[in-house]
Length: 312
Image (cartoon, rainbow, N blue to C red; front, side, top):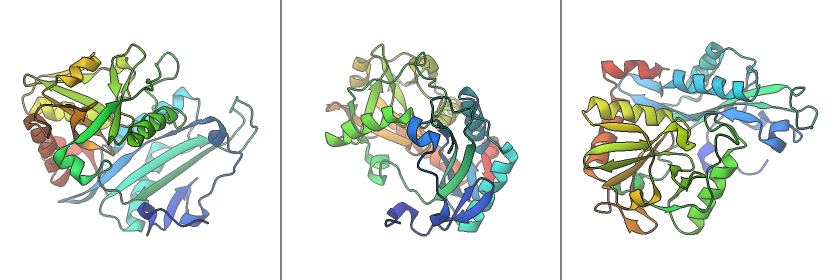
């Protein structure tokens, strides 16, 4: 086996198809259906080190979305949600992690290799590992430079955008590669109509005149769980939130503030788009308040948000 990537150093165990197996033994056949056709569903979830110990952030919502995504692709996950919860909690305990990233995945495995996967078995796995700020600690503080991708987000009339599916992330990979290749921190992807959709792995928010806007589900976006959380936090702080907005490319350039949200990205300010400085070119006051409140909740969950956490 080739040398491990740094992020997996020290990880000993994977949960795979009902068993805890050694990291090196967690393998999939090269003729697995999902490897060839992208027929898998997955989630990205974070466990945070709170004042009350390790806690998984909005696990139930992520789990619900995993099963909903599976339903769209006729993937019958051979485990009950409670079993995946027990496996995940036990895996974090075995790895002795106070905080981590969690990746549950279910996919069509080794079977007949035609397009129809119905005769292929469904395989399920969960991995956990330490993972810091996805776009970098500096990005959380100072913001990130972005560019509009030449690749458009696929429409929900072509591939369901409400499902978090392995194969569809090729679209995100292309956008991210293009942005990084042109020395930008991240991409912003437009939908087929030319309006703003989201980032490759993030939802996007715009601040204008003290009000907050985020692209609606009809704009070919994933219904992000961090997106939902930030909407709730913003409304609880008294902000007017327009969560079904259509945002044009030009509106990005003239926004007072922009920021990404996502499990990996958390709340990351956007300081420029296509070399156009946004606001003062750094984290704006609304973004700062939301980001601060978000991380405060994660560190010391108040009673009103306690149901967002599954304690390990």
